[in-house]
Amino acid sequence: MRFDAGESTWSLPARKREAVPSRRRGRLPFAAVRPDYELIAVNGTRLQTPGHERPAPAGAICAVSYRAELRPSAWEVLSHLVDPQASVVARSRLTGGLPVDEFEAAGTDESTWSLDSAIAAAANMLGQPVREAGGGAVVEALREDTDDLSHGEVITAVNGEPVQTATQLRAALAGLDSAELKVLRGPDVSQTARSVRLVRHHDGAWGIRVVTASRTLRHGIDASFTLPDDLRGPSLGLACALGVLDAFSGGRLAAGGTVVATGTVDLAGRVGGVGAIEYKARAVRAHPNVRHFIVPADPASDVDAARQVLGGRAQVVAVATLAEAVEVLGGFSWRGTQRTHRSHGSAVG
Image (cartoon, rainbow, N blue to C red; front, side, top):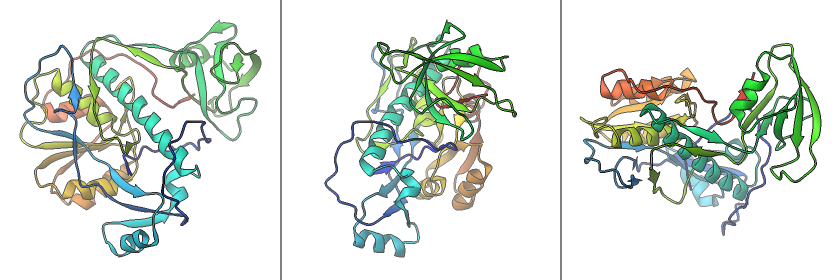
């Protein structure tokens, strides 16, 4: 199974998702991890843009992943131990303690969310208004000192005023020290809501992280991707957003050499951190035609790790926004419209 290694600094609960059973038993509590040397071009035939004729791209914009056997055999564990490019780690380090089937199903959900956000971020930069709708703000993570709310509950109103998205929740809480929330146990709106009084912590944070429940995004860009079925995780976003921008702006972003990118992108175009940078850099190192490896600027330790692995074979570019990545590739400042949206999994502060 290959993963693109989205990563979070908040501990998340086990989410209820339909999981596809695997035939592998996985008795050993380890994961066998190695680079995935196949770069996945996302601005060519894998990108569909119905109704929009686009020139052939001048170069490839690629996503990169890593491979992890989450149910390794004893032989796979041994072979990875002797391979200097591979590693064997505790399986829980990758799965966060979730059952493997549920972890893989969660990765599929995160990939879908990430691609939707990436296309919307690209549409935003192309001057297309992006409208987000939803059924409230679902609590995805909680600080340990946040009481009264639970994982998976959906906030639908603040002080009697309805909220449909995570963006609206943040706006409603701005400037308040406490608020009366209307909360549902889950996305079923027919259930009886309960009231919760939420108070800011002493450091000014509310101590919750939310995403829009039942999110839909509307904009003027019709784009979709056909990606490998075994690819999981959210950090395809940056590469795919660049692929869409390339398709709708003349196909010249990767002129002169292959571009590889990894990172999440939210609706505002902010680039988020990912994991397994070292393995991804090893995969990039195996392709001498790669010109740029674009990575999230935060954490800086990941940027340093990528540069150490590549040793100058490709330029490692650290970016905080999608616009910065475009400026590096295009050699110009992007003049598209910028609008503010909250990210997937944003902390409410």
